[in-house]
Structure formats: structure tokens, C-alpha cells
Amino acid sequence: MLSEGGLSVDALTTRKHPVRHSRYLNRHIPFDGDADFIEALRRALTTGKYDCLLCIDEPARDLLFAHRSDPEFQPYLPFAEDSELFEAVKDKSRFYSWCAQHDIPTPQTTEVTTYEAAHEEASKMGYPIVLKAPAGSGGTGVFLIQNAEELRAQIESGEIGSLWLIQEFISGPVGSTTFAARHGEVFAHCSSEKYLSLGDGLGPSAVRRFNPDPQLGEIAQQIATAGGITGITGFDWMEISVGHFVVIDPHLGRGTTTAVLSPLAGVSIGKGMASALNGGSAEPAQNNSNKIVWTMPQSIELTFQGQLFNALRKANPLRKDVSIFWSAPGEWKLLCVLYAEYLLGQTRIRLGRILKK
Image 1 (cartoon, helix red, strand yellow):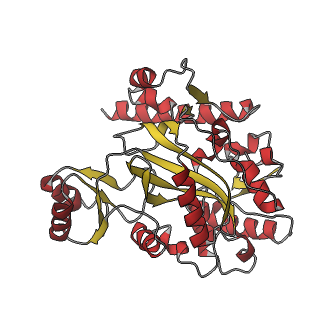
Image 2: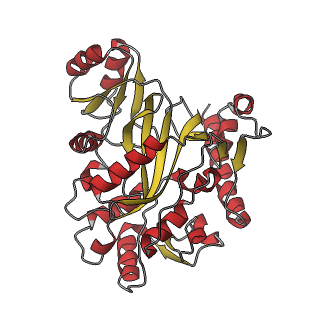
């Protein structure tokens, strides 16, 4: 995605990470353990050869944030050193407060610490409600609660600690927006919504549908401006009514898995990042298409969860508006390694469950 924009990319990963097989990678820099990650990153950045640092996942982002006062890292931070976002991106309650300060739309949300307070707020909102842990992503720590009995059972289980968020339930589509920005200016953005999700419907998506609504681009610019954001990042949203959206979760300071799908919507996040770094112009908005895309390897999980036939009924790949994203062009080696590891891991999990029985 980044090399498509003409950028040369080095990757700092664990020693056996599959990305080392990518044909688009300029250099693989391996590390062993958290302490080695910081030292390897410091050595790389002090060479002065890099224009931008992108954290792809939360562990890398959190390690960088923990050392953000180091002078070697400061030119590469996604926000100003004193930004509230360093803490808000890991705490949904603080993130919602930050959004309120900048008039960014979010669902009605209340922080509670007891069942009694939770039930009182849930009763005001009206069941069903969404119960959330302050931290978590990918659907973890998120529960759809239908009544007071379910609320009490979930809270007393201790699964999400002693601080919870009670949030209004919205039945509209759930999606995410990815954008590339520099110093608060957005150079490319792409939005898509969950079409088929794993697990109970609150987990990661396996099949997505693009949503070209311009308001999502406006919200992306609003967030980027308020945070002075640099990098490729994004946020999750819900559509409360046609053309009206609220932000539900941040991915700020790290990449989003949907970024690689953007070329299928007629916009290149990679080219947008290149323009941001080189003083170019913004990419055109994504095309006016609601195309449906099977994402890999997540879609393979549909088979393990017994949802494959339902998925084929809803999004048959033979339809003109449906496609499958296997990998970037020519990435067959990386594709084979990645999927082999994924299938091996899933097989081990299921064999373990069988042996336990």
C-alpha cells in the first residue's frame, strides 16, 4: 500500500514475522522483546533516513507512547507531545470526553462503577444498552445487554473490571474510516462498514461494504484537525440515521486493517501518505460505490464458525458488486506463509478443544 505511493518502507517486527516475505519491503529490521524493540527503533531513527513512523498495531503504539519523551522519537509522534490523545486512545471514557470538547459526534455514554448506577443509567436510556470496558478493541470488552438481569450477571462476572461504560444501543450499520494525514490535514480517506462479522456480530468483520458518504470524510478531517494528527490511522463509527454518524472507538496513533482495501474504492491511502510527506495534493474521494469485499484471512474464519453458507447467500463472490481481497499484487509468497500460519493455528485450537472433551 505504501510502496504504491512511491515510498520506500522498512519494517521493524519480531524476527519471524510474515511481513519479512513481502516483495514490497525494502528492509526487515528484527527485534527480540519489548526492550529490544525500543532500542532497535531508536537506532533506526537516529540514522535520519526516515520521514515518517507508522505503528501498525496497539503493542507497538503503546511502547512508543511510553517513551514519547525521548528526543529521538518526538519528531515521529502522531500527535504533539502534550496531547490528551496519548491517554485518550487507550481509554474510551477519556476519548469521548475529548470528542465532546471538539464537537465530534459520539453516542450517549455514561461512566459507572456499581451495578446500581449502571442499572439506573440503563433504565434512563432504555434497554437494550451496550456495556463496554474503558479499554479494548476488536469487539473485546463489548457486550449487548438486553435487560437488568443480563446487566447484573455481566458486571458481577468481573470480566471487565470495576469501571464500565453504559452506552445507548444504536441498531444502524457499524463501520470504520481510515485516513492518511499530516499535521492535521487529511490527504486520503476511505470508509467501509461491517457486512458480515465474526462471533456474535460484535467481533471483527470478515466481509465489508464500502460507504462513500461524504460526512465520514468530514468527521475524519474534524478529528485530524482537533488532534493535529500525522500518519495512517482511523476510527470506528455507527450510522444512527441515513447520513448521520457517531464515532464509537478510536484507532488513533496506529494503523487500521481496512487501509489496504482502499484501492478497491478508488482511493489510495498509500498515495495519500506519500503526498502528505512530499507536499502533494490530496487524493480524490472514494468513488460512489457500495461494493462488498471479502477480507482475508478473516473470511476463512467464517468456515470455522459455520457461517460460510450464510456468507455465500448474502455476498456471493460471483456477483458483480462482490470481490475478494486476497493480497496485494504479486504477494503470493507472503499470502501462502500468512494463511498457512493462520490455518495451522486454527487447527491447533480446534484439536485442543476436541482433546479436552
